[in-house]
Image (tube, rainbow, N blue to C red; front, side):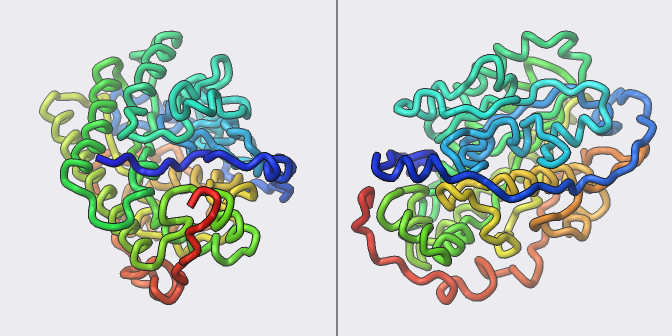
Length: 404
């Protein structure tokens, strides 16, 4: 099987490097968190009672998105603000920061921005001792490059450093789809390719639930990636970058409307597979009498794309999520975890810029029920974004760039 094109940083011409290094995020942050303090409930005895106040360890596996490459508009991985695993702050919300507003102790977060480690060997070895902690995401990570195998090795070795591991409630977030789908633009995914991707994800689940107890696992489904292409092509700087300088994510750079629609369809196929994996493991845990573990697809992005604007993309490469996007992703995940009544309609809140975090009360719990596939809202159902795909994305016929 031909390997998909990597999502993470391609070679950059030297004459362009200085320009890229000088670009940085300059927008002022403002906090969207205004929730009141609450009294925490008694410690959960099983996962169905899990409240944010109970979580004391966070973990994440993934690719350059979770490594937060270019989030601040530089060549650094801004791991300290990574949406699902960065330490975060009031003005740059992350999932661990939200948890820390309710839990007395949260550990495992990545705490410092770093250059990708071993750029010429990515995704392998992109881990920074002393600051990454339980963020084992690697730039260019892909299931088909055995990244989840390597990341499990990192995670299992570092988990052993934490006291009272089995008795503490842990949240693990896994998002590794983009690099496995980026180059898949000319036809549907083969059954073998999909099975290999799903099998790698399932092995990671088997590993973590065999090693330790009290784990809540988030599987993250993916938005319609064609929206990234649409946004890139609206900005002259971004369009020039991706026509002549960069070669990121296959047809997002240079694909025509048909190829972009096919990529979105393949994203939907992989999202569907995630739901099947979650349902399968929910049944396994039930059969095993495991009331200490849960696995849920968090579908806050699923089938969407047109709710996002250019602020979602990094100033550096107009491709990776910006610091704004990392905050939105963190809030989307948080809200999805706390959405218990109407998951089919995402509790009435579509993933979008500047959405606010849900404020839990003492009786709130993370969702631990059956897998729910979300309904795609009529405004976006059947479209890649506002308008038809063929109208919205002009075919890009200039494939003669440096990396074309």
